Image 1 (cartoon, helix red, strand yellow):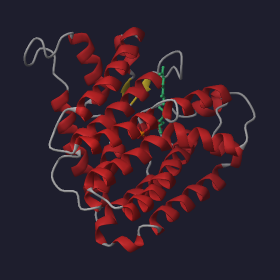
Image 2: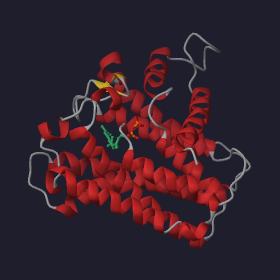
Image 3: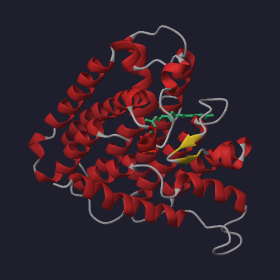
Image 4: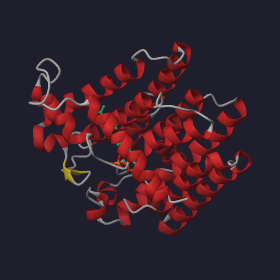
Length: 299
Ligand code: GRG
């Protein structure tokens, strides 16, 4: 299959749905887009940016288990809103102090620090509003999915991993610590994206187990590749500054194992992720190709 085309088409669907959740200040109704400064900051970071890998994974998993229709879209958008909030906050002066994100100045550079904090807060909260807006989906399934996404984003997931990351800066850390950071800071939301698709698509226990294995492996591989790109990647392709991990003394796979071993480990994780999908037929082809894309990506 043509994975680039698949990713492009899915990204277009996600982009259009996100656009629908983001009122354009000066566009439609007054109440909807007030206060305009907040909507401008959110649009700057959310609309048309990034690879949309988390929503695409949720859609690919949903379709792999036989899910039909667009019931996955509010969850796909919610996952992307949570991810975008984390990027906005990650770039703040108090965290990574990055000026550049997704090929444009970071949110706080354009709109100021207070607005960066509030745009992130707004997006995190909006994600849960969007995902819990009543639809025809069984509320018990929505509750289960939202609970899992909250867990993956918060103290036991992304935020916990981010704190461990910050506290490890400039220190000598061991492999289990780096693994904790990566599986929580980045892996947890990626895993939750895959599991959201399976649960909403009606996957059975066996499929959920297999795709959980898949999601755990690609989640860790994604951050290892992110570490490698921070050393070897091109700023113009990544749309963000490179070399910052080394400068800050961050705990990464390349700093601990070197580039070659890190690349080997990411490759092994990708193979393990794909292996577990073999019994499931053609429907899982996009998931296999996404795993390969994660390893080979340049941005
Ligand atoms: C609450 C103040 C406060 C801060 C929290 C939670 C948090 C800040 C940061 C999370 C850490 C983080 C940003 C993890 C994700 C790391 C990562 C791999 C980002 C890049 O993801 P891509 O490549 O980016 O999917 P695009 O731009 O393509 O969406």
